[in-house]
Amino acid sequence: METLREAWQSLLRILADSVRVLGRHWPVLVTVCLAGAAGRGAMLWLSVWVSNWSALLAMLLLPFASISVLVSMVLMLRVVAPSLPALHDSLGEQGDAPRIREDLVIAVQVLVPFLAVYASQGFIRADLSAFLFNATTDEWLNQGFAGDFAQRVDFASDAQALVLVLAALVLRKTIAGFDLARKNIGIAGFAGYLEALWLVTLASFFTSSIDRLVQWVQSRTVIVGLMDALDTVIEVLGPIGIAVRALIEQIGALLSSMGSLVIVPVAWLAVGATIYGSSLPRSTPLVTSEQMTRRIRRIPDPLRRAAAQVTEPVVSPVRNTLTSIGRIAAAGVVPMVFLCLLLAGASQLRVATTAALRGLIGPLEPALWTAVTPWMDVVAQCVYTTVMVALLAAAVSTIISRQREVAPVAKTPQDGEDSTSAPGSAASVQARGTSESPSGDGGEVLDRPGDQNRRDTPDTSPEVPPPADPAGTESFRPPEH
Image (cartoon, rainbow, N blue to C red):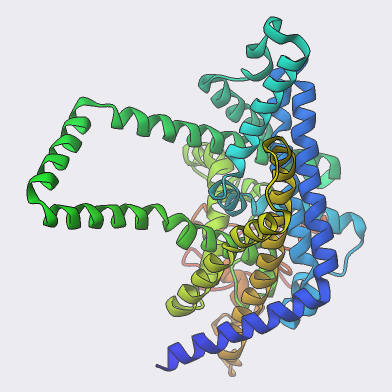
């Protein structure tokens, strides 16, 4: 009962903080959200225009549609942070260039959970469908039956899409290997684009492949025979068969709704944990591709080192996403369930907004509805995203505050006691960080001062060699002069 009471109090606190954040920041949030929607529409239009010359180049521009929405979401979450005291630590006191670089790194790290939200809401499929429809329509209106529709929209086969993904991964790894993103902010932006390119392309490939796989399975003779047999059994059972069919349909509906009930809320929470990660007490810092590459270089075994270098571009985003989810999951099962239900309920705002707009506008001619519907979708999505950002920031702030309240006070080491035994000591943090090295041999801690969200400050200090203690029980100290 105590857990339920605390979870209920946290939920009320989240709602109160969300209302306060919306009241203070809604003009800026709406403006940034609409700017992201405008950027998405502009990128889709530009892709259609470029397809007059090259369908492949149009495909390379499509990821910018999702990047526009992602950047607007990151900026919205950063805007509301000053209004929540628990999130102050997530904002660094830096200049414009370091802040832009920091936002780029955060946007890259948040790509996987963001694309989970973006895909589950149907935007990846919608972007591709909008491009295909508009390019085909443009070709028909300008060329008629003489139009070359395949040249406009047939930009890549499955094999070509996989080659594009591999090429993007190789380029991204090259930038990380030579640490080029640290030297030039433009290269850092290009690295973020490559990350988005291979993830969006792969997500689109999997989406279409899953649809084809389902159709292929359903068309198999064995599956058709089983479905016919099930219909026959249900018909023979009579009223009991009707109940069995209803139960099967309910189970199928429950499984199909798992995305909106679990995946989308957890992905939203992972987005918040990634952006506000520096405010979380005792959280594991996220690792960029450049940092992981430098760690991998310390692996002594050449085979393991080569394997780690090859898999790093895919493993690092997944590892960072799981780390972000773990940050929020530390709140407990019951609070997580409450949060998931709250965020899942907020997703119905789009439906409610669309219904309200349809009621206000009233009946229209089909041609007018075709012109009005995209604007209604933008408004509905803006309302949903604005409220969701406020709820997400308030939820992460509440979790951080709760963790700080229950965090044990670090024990002060007594005389004769090793300083590494103190949980909050710098040596303890260093020892704990070195044990997380992928090499397993006490590798270095890279860019550890401060949190990962304050990264990319050039480190001019010489590299510290690994500790000589094979057991890793003593923290490394530089020799005294």
